[in-house]
Length: 252
Image (cartoon, rainbow, N blue to C red; front, side, top):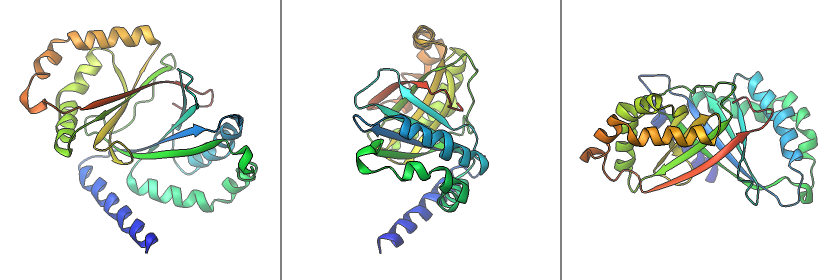
């Protein structure tokens, strides 16, 4: 019964995402956050990413898998993995294929053989995002842009989140470009924590460039024009912000 319920929920998720992106080719993003186990070598997990998971995803058609660590060196440490899919169908197909892929099983054998006291993480969370119409596909950053900001905007209701997404699509993304808030992706969280919410990623050369760009955004005439509009009022109830740095093997 539990498996049937999960299957039905996944079907509704697929059709919901398809209905929202029917007029375009909106990508799906999976964001995994691994909370590391204190005292366990991070290399146990990173070797799995480098040698098994990422090569398999690439071989099956997924490009630009990003792996990041928090710049603040939180305790316990966290590792963020961002996986872009062309569609919700590709997400389902590839995740099913990974489980039965012979090369993947061979490459991950050492990782799967780790005993509980060597397990690299305690748990990981996973969220699915549907890319905004205003930026339906991820933009891979330039080589010099290696400082990332991941932001989640929680809303107090589904309608508030919908209005914030409209604000981005119709007005705000353009202002981001004009003020050098360099987008990587924008997505509505369709499965995961903190709903209703949206999550997006920006990239910069460093913190100084980031601060200057946000200052320019706050002073921008178009932002000052749209910020007080009634249709965009009370759309964000909480902001979660994380600064990230890519690992040496990250493809983003």
